[in-house]
Image (cartoon, rainbow, N blue to C red; front, side):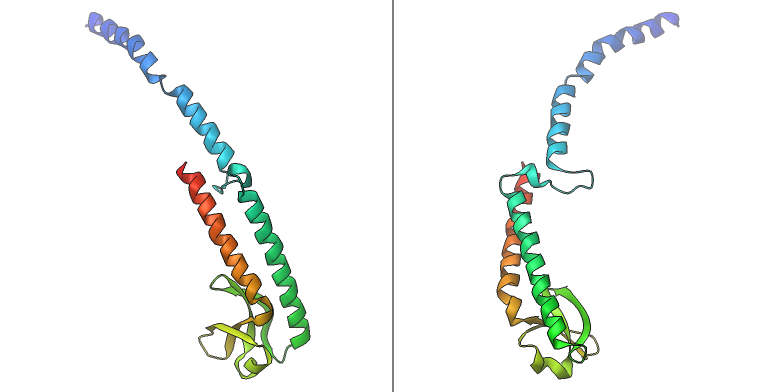
Length: 150
């Protein structure tokens, strides 16, 4: 009885070194992951060449588009707009326009409300910037995917 317990105990020291074989690799892997991905699971700007630059350009351009839309909102007023807040449709910044006032906001209709009373119009003033934002977003996705596959 007691000899069998001792034999089992003797086997443990032989297994332990094998358990720790991958520890160095795991520590290096954890460090690489921590350097690439933040606590929220978002790929860090510093994880790839160019990712920080693309995200910065996206933020700057989005701020410029919001500023342009705010100026349009101020010009058009409440009689034209169903809501003064710009919103996103199909990854493009749009204004919520009263359907009967569509002619007062030249641009592309990107969506229509369920009631048909509100049109989500991408004003022509921001169409080019919206397209550039979408290109930057695609570039960002490509860079993030490359980091996650590395």
